[in-house]
Length: 140
Ligand code: FES
Image (cartoon, rainbow, N blue to C red; front, side):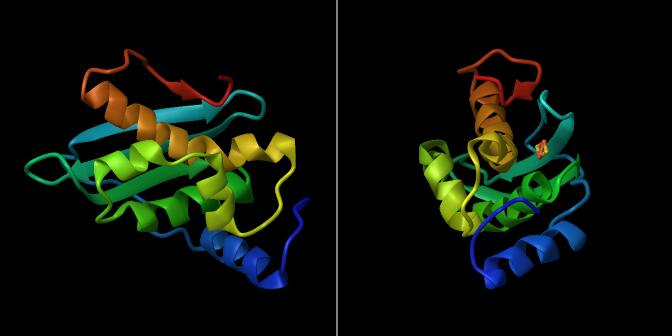
C-alpha cells in the first residue's frame, strides 16, 4: 500500500476501506459538500447534519471513490466527527489526520489522507458563508 507503520494500523485502514463506516447518504442533511484530489481523481462527497443550534456535528455520511488512504480516512473521520463541536473540526489539521490513521504517510499521500477533512471543513465554511467555493481540491 506504500505506507509505513504497524500492521495493526494498516489492517485498520484496510478494514475501513473495505467496510467503510457511515457510507451512503443522509436525507435532508444540513449541507453536502464534495471534493477531489486532482492529482489522481479521488473523490469524497459528504453529507453533514448539525444539531439545532449548529454548534455540534450530529452525524456524517459520505460516498467516495479512490485509494485506501482517502477512503479509509473519510470512514474514520465520519466516526470521529459524530458529536464533535464544529469548532473542533475547524481546528483539525493534517497532523490530527495522520494521528488518526496511525501510519507514516509520504508527502504525496498526505493529500489523499486529508481530502475528507478538507471537504468537511470547507463544507462548514461554505455553510456559514465564510467561503465561496464549488468544490474542494487538495491543491491548496
Ligand atoms: Fe489519490 Fe489517494 S491516490 S487520493
